[in-house]
Image (cartoon, rainbow, N blue to C red; front, side):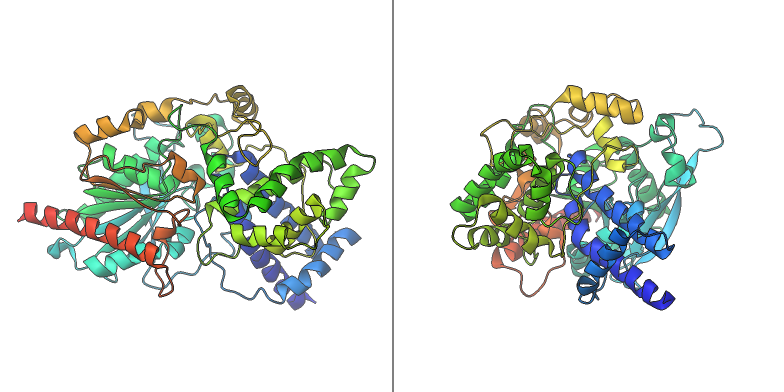
Length: 542
């Protein structure tokens, strides 16, 4: 029995990770949607652990039995398919991604506070994880480049597993690969553990993008010195939040990096630079361009959910329509979950994902004639998730989320939308509500203007044209975040490289023979630009 339990345990975690992990980051700035999915994963894991301890009720045991047929086909190699907020609570430490042996993991003794000389008790440093791959490196004496991934809101191994384009760059240019984990994520947590780090606002006060950038600067400088690679040029790369960091790193530390590739980096989604509804307007366009009837069905579904929920036994009826494992207590959680599903499918509408806009719309439009709106929506949900029943939980904000802290302090992206602006039900951005939530959770007040104060953003064309150089802003226009990205060339060296058909961070993924021509062309353009940076550097060095 113990062997069976062990097999089922591994299978369940892998299955849930495969299904839920891609959904965890439909919106990097919308902590509500992401936390709902994280809490869902943790709740299911707790149910299963109760089973292991013989504390399960019949409902929990029934859930296990429902998962058995899913587990039968879940014997795949565990990996992350997209950047995301891979929390330790999601058992990444137990089921870590297995990287090839040339990826070597190290820990660096990093400074806790780069901007103060005041000691914090007995703690002035922490262990920061980084990964190196020197398989292709020409060596320090050859001035071969160092490609640095500026770690984002994820465990570092997932980034290294996904971003195969960086490996391709290293092989082309005899480069050294260096991936640096963002402080407070993965295994790079100050104060010894996440539990200790999250004990107080005072301890979380060292958790910021500026501290993270200073981490990268210090680690890179020391590594180059220790390997006698002072003459090796550094190129920063990153995707999404990591792309924002890569571009900011080039701006803040131009003496350390000669250029940056910022993939799907919404650096303009702050203050009033980008319309608040642009993210959802882009997602809506993705669906409407795919199918007008699909778009209309989704747009009408929200009021239908509210209508059914208001009826006697309405929540019970909704539970039946959407095949919930347990009766839902709130129609709002159902709507949040469906919104996350649509946004994820738009944001990652990339080949060869199995959860695309076209797949959802085919399920909605392909339902039998006479099928009502909610059963059409349920069909899309079923074809995308593939579980025998759907799990929804009662959402409550928590103070155990890394990205929640960041959005409660400096990463205040004002994403919201009014009535009839998109296919979604009205959800305007409300700074007062965000402030109240952040005060309740962390006793902090968000700084909505800090990012543009620290890194700029307003009048970006004229500002960067005067003093910046060597940044590639890459985007796929089907990505809702592209609305907050740089989509026009600012100068001959600060360029926008985008595709009409691509979505989020696709150019960083591992190249394959089946990649569409437009993706290959995008990457080739980026390669040629990076090649020019290296050639210019070597010419000056000579």
